[in-house]
Length: 255
Ligand code: IPE
Ligand code: IPE
Ligand code: MG
Image 1 (cartoon, protein in one colour):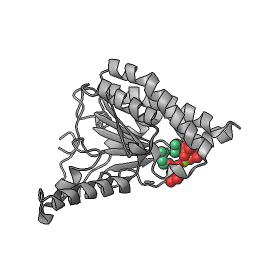
Image 2 (spheres, protein in one colour):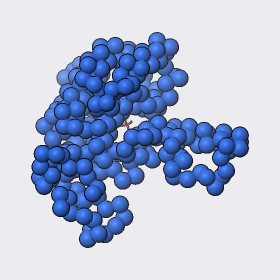
Image 3 (cartoon, helix red, strand yellow):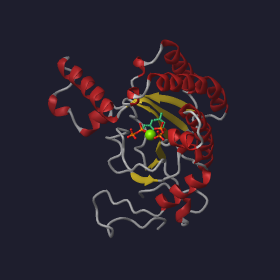
Image 4 (cartoon, helix red, strand yellow):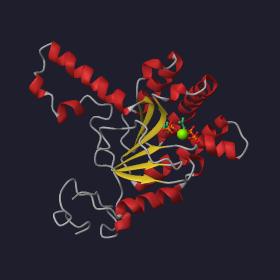
């Protein structure tokens, strides 16, 4: 079984829900520009869109939702936009963590948080501690995250283990690398969604996306709603995931 069928009607392909959805929330700036608004207004509207998608994923029974909020390359943006984004992140954490906790959702942040201001780091730690034991939807916010950074930090940890004699070079395997990555212990993304029209990965979860189904939409992130999510999910439900095998070898969904 390659997909996790819903309990209600496993034979309906539209009911096949991805366990892990990873989203590049792109297009905030263009959304604002079209309205003659400052880019930050697009980012604010983007937070609202994210809130709705979090709710919808919780309802649909998604296990993990990873949201790309700030890439390791986004520091290249004008300093004012970067600092407004940091402020928005802090405010969103403060505002949302209690509600997420009430909804049994778990919040975690992946990425190099050492680059953030101390008060943002504290707020992240507080939100993670508050929601850490929750068993519902896990929301992973990728912030100062880069897929290459993730692989590099994993390599560094493994090298340290080798240097200390804890590990032999031959024991560096896909599994041992995986075990040092930021999303260790969670299922790999089943469905990747990128809004905003660009068809690229932009250094998101490089290792973990190896066999993820990709879905691109021109919709700008602030306009992304449950109807768009439904389209992505039904596209996903109709794909055959072969993992290198032939189509005939792969069990028919729902069979
Ligand atoms: C995505 O929207 C949000 C972040 C990268 C923080 P953009 O800000 O990249 O929006 P566009 O691509 O300029 O429209
Ligand atoms: C990717 O979007 C990162 C986030 C959405 C946080 P970008 O807008 O930074 O990606 P590029 O620069 O167009 O590839
Ligand atoms: Mg962009």
